[in-house]
Image 1 (cartoon, rainbow over the protein chains, first blue to last red):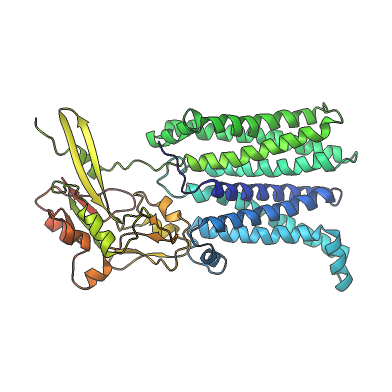
Image 2 (image 1 turned 180 degrees about the vertical axis):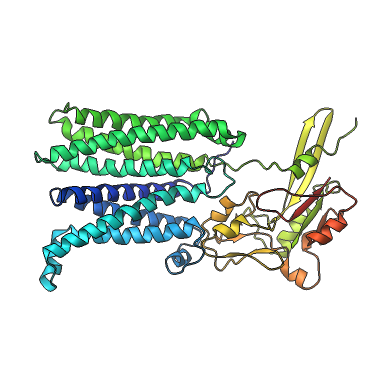
Length: 322
Length: 172
């Protein structure tokens, strides 16, 4: 049977980058709020990465629609806030601004440039950083949630119309975002004190992998039991046309490989030479799995079969007498 | 509330309604959009099989799911119940396609959504929609749901069920 491809790989990129950027910002906001200025390099990277990721995702979203330039109206008007596409557009806009501002506040050359022209004392910078970090957590969690609610709100795609989908997308957003930050920290932060933070991040990743695995399992198993239409969709992933990318890329590369990688990092089992390659493999696997998850959930969004009492009556209607 | 009544006992699946619509509305050929479509529903096993043709376009629902999700406000439900899309406002995001339970929204090369508008301009001139006028066997009717119910009184016509409240009566 055909898979859903009206919203295809490009929409999957938008959903993935939105989630990744949101998760990364939440991660560095928490790091900034709890550790102050000790891990500037990671916070700066994470903030810029999240702003760029969400901006790129939004750009791909605009490119994909039938009228990209006209779609910019989404950022100029306030029509139909009952639609998650409208709400999402403003969440994305807000996140790009917030994350970008936050990133600027952690970029020394920018701070020096501003400080040379206007009074911008250190205490003020700290206050702004805290405010933006807190706001950023809420807005970016909103972005992560919107990517799921966009699909789950319409009622007639059984595989999407469930709370499990936004739950899965939020779990995946946090997982890929924290994964990006943890991967960067593993590669770039080498101070002794950073080892604690790196291990905490690795521990968080392992917890997030287990959470996502649990949510994914519950989502799929509930869909297999929910209705014939939902089962048709879920079976595409577990045993049907999409089973290879599901088991290999989403479960294998997306969950199992990073679990092993970050567990070995936590266990201090990595020798010097492997200390670069292994986290990189873990990070790339995590990201490939994240995009593939979005793409497969989109592709499995089949419409429900039309079955209404009126149609049922018709089907039982005319009989040809031999 | 305007809608359609399809008498499936009469429909022979000729597709005259499909072509009349494409012609009148200048729906571009080769882009794959057909505002009105005919589907054949088979049921049963030999020797008791049934074959029913159903002509359907937009259901002009009482609670249109498409209107609810459009981020550009391009789709509106008029006071007379007809659901219309303003193609100059549509941004082509396809969200209405995913919201509609009947797969009604279609898109051509210009990227905007296009669908049946119950031939609003013909209704305002006191004429029937062109699909109704073209049907050679009188299987297709359009009008207010009250008028259609009266028309279908002798047949067992039921309103198509669904949470979006499609404005379509079907009889066998």
